[in-house]
Image 1 (cartoon, rainbow, N blue to C red):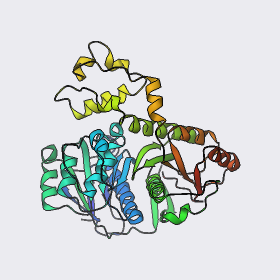
Image 2 (cartoon, one colour):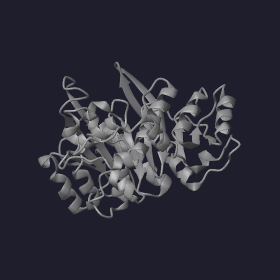
Image 3 (cartoon, rainbow, N blue to C red):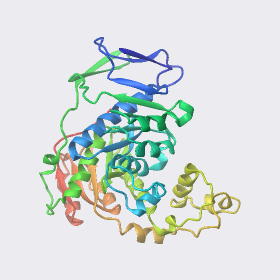
Length: 392
């Protein structure tokens, strides 16, 4: 198959639409189910590159959850503890395969943003992973292959219309890539710079200790940023992204956005949230939305009379600002990557509030000394990678 006709482009009025190979070559994909669209393929191809690189860097199965050409989450296949199983809604599924754990983590980090995601998997999709995918609202999945059982499970989703794409894992694109804007063609070399632990060797802070877990999480952060719309930063902990701030013009706004997402991830693990008395049969999306409001500043929207009865068996107490502050003060050991340098120390001040202990960023700001000084104040370890990771 040298080309594939699509229903339309980004929007229904943008016709005709297709994907194709310029040199009359075969497309490196097969559509095994469904009818993927233009944005689906943008998510699929960006997501596949991310998980392929993540597996190469960590030697662990990897997954990502994409929405509108940026990852909402990315993770490697580490086991889930009981708390994570509960906040990711898989405590009823028993022991899961490493690949399934990777997707559960990628989807679970920011469940609000991952609603209706496109999934990319580094390894052949197994039955465990397919069962996790089947119960989530998702647009599709791309992987290098599928077991027979996994494919049967996925083909049952959306009445047989779920998008399932298989990609040739040995496919290598040309070193030059092209993009057309307003009838004008842009050409550039592909960003094939490998992201490895060697990039973390220049520690510029007084604290020069980077534990292996922090190195792994910084690699996850940097590889995630390589495929995130810029400006972007990524908070990571425990083998997964926990907060991604994408597409902001101001770097500190990236940090605030990602930091708030990381805070929400940790607040979901608080006893006040774990013990919420949801009504029986509540839908997963309604439960996610309720938690998001409950831990936020507009909690009264779901606790007022006439509203809480829809969601809860009894009215939960307010999760106060003081209680949230005490819980968030326990958050530590978080890694933070940035796709470009931090121009001001306010980024570090905000990062500290979300438990950041380790940072990787290019360096090169005229105020690097003030950024380093702020890191030293909080005993953070920071590496200058000397590479920028803009993605557009």
